[in-house]
Amino acid sequence: MPIAARISPKDYFTPQEWAPFTRRSAWVGPVLIAHCWALMIAAGAVAVIWPNPLTIILAIMIIGARQLGLSILMHDAAHGAIHPNQKINDFLGEWLCGAPVGAQLSKYRDYHLGHHKFAQQAEDPDLILSAPFPISRQSFWRKAVRDLTGQTFFKQRFGPVLGKLKGRAPGVSASEVVWGEIVRQRRFLCWQLGLLIALSLANAGWAYFVLWLVPMATWYPLVTRIRNIAEHALIAKNEPDPLRHARTTRANLLERLLIAPYYVNYHSEHHLFMHVPCHQLPRIHRMLKAKGVTKRMVTQPGYLAVLRLAAPVTPASPSQAGA
Image 1: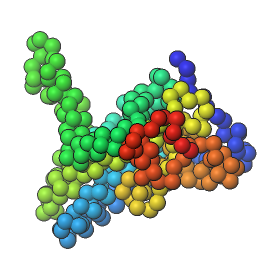
Image 2: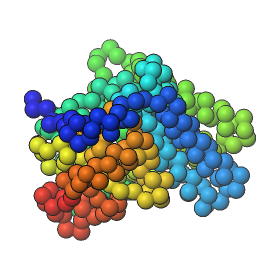
Image 3: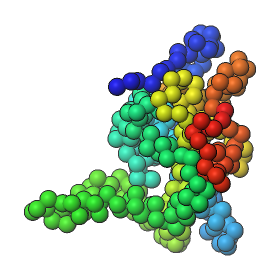
């Protein structure tokens, strides 16, 4: 199996320049997690105190994007980048980031490190996400509609258990399959029950359904799809140059709020130096730009520009991905 080519930090940085990136902060990661939850609580509180279509829709978008933010911070924990103490790192990533949105750090880590090992090579487990592009604009909008109407959420959340029920072995009851799924999802379900109880005690039980489940079933799947497209769509398969294994997308303030939280847009830099915490990626980008390296990397000026490439009116060939 061909392993994706990698570079060494010393190829582009002096030891003095690289030294700050080797240190792990004990407080920045936890602060980012606290920020994520605080922003969701603030957006939800505004919608509860002043409920109207504008505040509710905005809260759904902000909370859905921060649910993606929790996944991104769990991703950082998968690289050991949330806290220098491994046990604390894994606890924060598992319980405060992954479990609330139904992800499991330990399983994700094994899968995701395989993606880095074989990035854009035939064995890359994420290659299936980027391989279909470019697609027609009509196809993209059909997918977006499925995301925003909850169809993607239902398929991802309930599709596996329905498949197990359909394909269960003789002698295995439906209740055994369902119970096994409940046990597997116990952390996620505990979080859902806890949020429902907490909001109900605050006389805002409706907010759990409207301001937590609806974002998770609509905006979260859509921005996850957009993020996946931006990261690797139209990147050449079996690309030999590690500078071109992923795309960096410049994000303005609104995009960072509603689409790309916690520096996830610096995906090329992340693939180059995967153990660097997410909050350090903008600094690495600036340093690489000053050294002229970003000219060789795949970049785009914003998410709309990426979508125009990935879902044009007339689909282009992968060779037209552009830098």
